[in-house]
Length: 555
Image 1 (cartoon, rainbow, N blue to C red):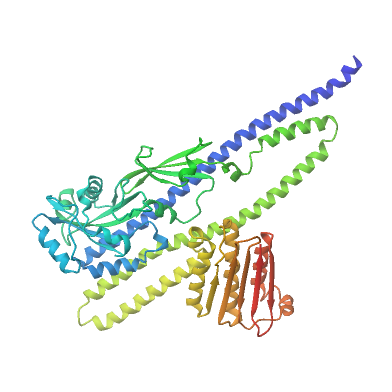
Image 2 (tube, rainbow, N blue to C red):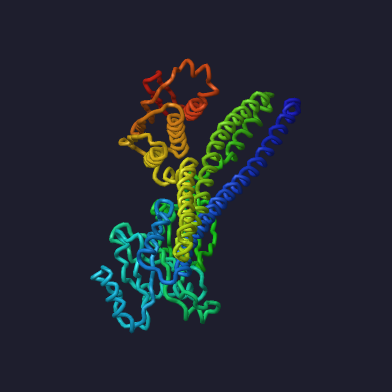
């Protein structure tokens, strides 16, 4: 009886401790599941928002062409080509293959239309597909008129039901409309991607368009933008959510037949998703279904699920409580968790900084470039409409204004590149260094040679950002202080550790004097050193007056 009486309190403490452990385990397991679902929902909202923003940019670009016709009446091939060239389609608009023009041609006008195009330098021009139809809407121009874009000249999108439906919708509403999932006519036998086309109607200059009937009577053609889906998704600013599979379907049906995009490809098909979310998106009068599901490794994004840890630690603490050793173990666990949180917070701050730069760069570019291009077009239209008596004085002012716009556009591009070059996200560090070196050389007149011949495997995004910032800081210091004429940037990532070297032929400096003035003129060196050491790397600098400077980083 004495043996039992002395052990009952110990058994009660053990039972209560295990009960509390079970309650905490269940609570943490439930919260971890909610947190993962919230993160997946946020990822889906972010992708949806970026798609909407990019499609809005495309719509504004087509409306610029529509405005060109509205202001100038009929637009010739050269004027249309000049407009598209002013948009400077490139990496920021990857996915859109060009801006084209489809003209309405009646059956009676067909032969004359074909003859006119052939006289313009297209001897093989013909409306395809053939056959007799009441009206035709052949593509008469798709700029830039290079590569695969040449294949669509003469193609009649109005002859196919899925394209005709979008064209009719755009005509009747006066707003942009897109097709469902199609295979674009410009596709080759390799790298075939699902795609869609965006249409915006062009009405006769000065003709009424306030009703569906008047819009149908006034229509003279469409502005067209063919878009390849994989390239379009790759062009969006921001990183793709890791350890997730994003799929986009045409319409509400989620099947292989309607699949427009799958970020994971064949790697994402096996197995069942742990968590998933779905969003419906209205794009130019068309519905897309966006779905996201978790892949192995997604749980680690939110920090590991601590429910198992709580169960094990709770049982251990329950036993230790009965042995009166709870204080030491609890203190040790808390200290370890605090260190992990501090480390995670530091990395999170770096990621937030780069994410902020990326968003600022993307929004600054997307919101200003189309408007500046449209302003330039409007200036051309105004200049052409000036009376001869006022043309000399006002024409000079218009030329000054156009020069200011071009200078502003160039400045915005430089600011975007300094904030966060998009090429760093979609093409990697070597391509980003090449691009930035070219921009730096044009801006400063200093020749920059980049050697990334031994590229190796792609680095982690955080490390690529840090190495890029080190090069950016080094080149900025050269431009400000070194009076260099040439700079060499060498990246070796084919082995471990990764090596980065920046060498210039500038004036150099005394390292001892630099140490004495560490927080005045040496602030850039401190920044580069801290970036390297943050990732556990080694930073060294060698310099002598009149003999240039060499910076070496190993991570």
